Length: 343
Ligand SMILES: *[C@@H]1O[C@H](CO)[C@@H](O)[C@H](O)[C@H]1NC(C)=O
Ligand SMILES: *[C@@H]1O[C@H](CO)[C@@H](O)[C@H](O)[C@H]1NC(C)=O
Ligand SMILES: *[C@@H]1O[C@H](CO)[C@@H](O)[C@H](O)[C@H]1NC(C)=O
Ligand SMILES: *[C@@H]1O[C@H](CO)[C@@H](O)[C@H](O)[C@H]1NC(C)=O
Image 1 (tube, rainbow, N blue to C red):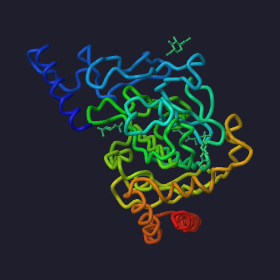
Image 2 (tube, protein in one colour):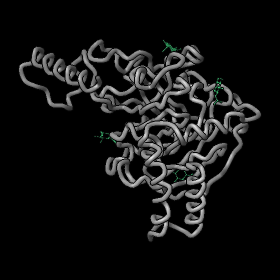
Image 3 (tube, helix red, strand yellow):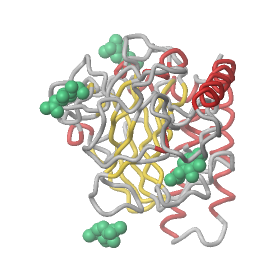
């Protein structure tokens, strides 16, 4: 479906270009005035955003929501499509605008669900997040974990999918969706910066979200062509039930390489009630079932890659240049925990 419609779309845009101009404009020419640029070619400084990045009724457009989000738009009906990945306390995920959504059906129109109020978005309900790890590496920041995905509008059984600013027509999923961060490596400290390349998987009660350093284009840590292989393959990390932690980390192998869990250091653990006073429940009841379904369900490739990630971890640890002994120990422990979690 996606491929067919993109072929039609490319056909349509070629036709419209040739009917409007006698010579084809260079690819970098900003805008024909009535059709969208590839989403990654738009640059914005926050909060100077248009109401909609993609208001154009061509191809899959216009976008379903809006980019200016504020206290008026905040709440359970929000169609905000501007989101943030700042810290373990303050991040958002793309979720369904209507209950019982399936990512494959709603990917073009997903909306932001955030861990806390303040961004004009929907807010994750209490108890949604059951494990979160926030990692900062030279190449990217990343938040990974386990959750009750009904909290972001997804059907409980949805094995999910991937959202990114590309897509066959380069208009993004969601169309017009923007990501900002005040914590992006390579950006000036505490400056809210537009993240050009990012990738977010949600499904099987597992999530992962990576925001890449705008200054590093190679290797592409946000490469998002392995979109059916899930979090364990694309963003190998601990995914340990009930653990909430912030760490520094080595860069992972770019997606498509061995899905080895990268070494982490300087980890600090937190309680979810401290992190999410607005949304945490005092007891976590979802742990058992969420961890079971996160490791066991999902697309077939995910489970396969997840076990190879764990067994590949040990040889990689022995390689030189991986850092201090303490890093090895924490990685070995992390890898063993990973094996237990998979079993
Ligand atoms: C709040 O957001 C809505 C929806 O994008 C927008 O129409 C409105 O102008 C915004 N209000 C302010 C005060 O920015
Ligand atoms: C950001 O601030 C920290 C602490 O003040 C400093 O160590 C770091 O080098 C700064 N990073 C950049 C990119 O300026
Ligand atoms: C973003 O991704 C596109 C497509 O993969 C790539 O051409 C571009 O260099 C990337 N930009 C940055 C800033 O990483
Ligand atoms: C997820 O949340 C829904 C709505 O609160 C609840 O009915 C369901 O039992 C939860 N699922 C798990 C696995 O805890």
